[in-house]
Length: 539
Image 1 (cartoon, rainbow, N blue to C red):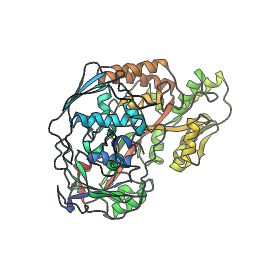
Image 2: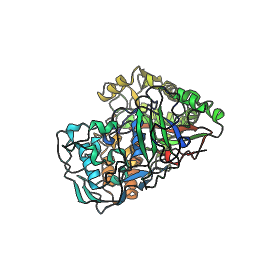
Image 3: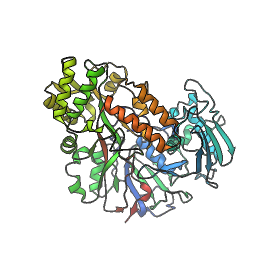
Image 4: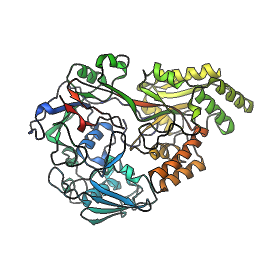
């Protein structure tokens, strides 16, 4: 799933890799920071590639990076940014940022955490020929070129613990992004003579965060062993001896291990256990909203969905959907009905936005609006919601379609595509002829991240080709605002317009549904659905 801008609907949360039923002790390395009894066992998945922060955009590698690196900020449980390696991040115009680091910090190999650690890592990430998966995160820094190698001239080292960042355009939420793994620093030992991060470093990563990878701790497709980093002095003070992240090939197998006492923390209960996990686990479960927004998109290019007629039909369809009933019956309350365009865990979430009554179930109003649309142009054909059949979406697509069918009296149904890749290709090349499931998982806990990529004209994940100059202007004004609160005011105004235009039909927020064993305490799930490993204690 997720790490970077996964766009519309890449919300597949199943873990990948080989099944392992053990792995509760540390590696052969010493247990500096605690004995083997203090190791916490958690589920994970084999990283897609070497652990270079700017080259990982999936959750298996991402959770490892977040545990072993200290960036300028980290995000607390609610998604608030907290200074970590940085002492301060300051700006007067949201364009030029001065970053001061806390002095005396080191990587676990002894290399200093200094200005060069960040600047060199970011330059490697942005260099076109390196092909880093997360290079786009640096596109607003002066000097970035997405078509050829170039120097990030917007980065300037002032002294050992101070550097300056100059952006191409004002960006009020730039500091909020700086807790994301793409912006982590790298030690001098990571680079070759040409200033590029080596593949060997990715296989033997060295960080500066709460945990460190144990010697020979990464057994590919099996597990990775991490130990407490005694030299880390930041806010994420580790309360255990380390982590054993076990790579499972299915959540069902991980859940069986949890029930059997062979796993301490499972970050996602499998769908098959939704009806019984509370009974199985007693009070050892967590069900809370996460930074995942789900919807379906109705492109304006579809017949009957442009202009005033399309606006009326979109509103009627939204009012036809009984979201509380579906989240209860289909998802066993592991989803929360949407009332805005982001998520309850995002800075800027507002459940009282003007116009959000359009996501409330109101069948009588829906019928009235549909009749008004028919007066413009009588309805013809059938309404379908496209989805990938290999992702477990049939039940909700059928339920939503049935609500629309029963309320509006039209032929409505789900439209399955066997494979996710083919489904996404039909959306990307605009060959899909139906509405289609969509959504977004946050890259960082900022409201702009849930709006600009999806609804700004020409944005990378604007697969419905929505365009409204007023929305574009408000989004730009939000980015240029002097701070997050001022920015969110502009973004909220944009959201109010989105409720009128409905470029997508908001459905629900996906919850983090997790469980833990009788062997641990103090389990908290963060804003991004990942446990706060450093807080967990072993009984």
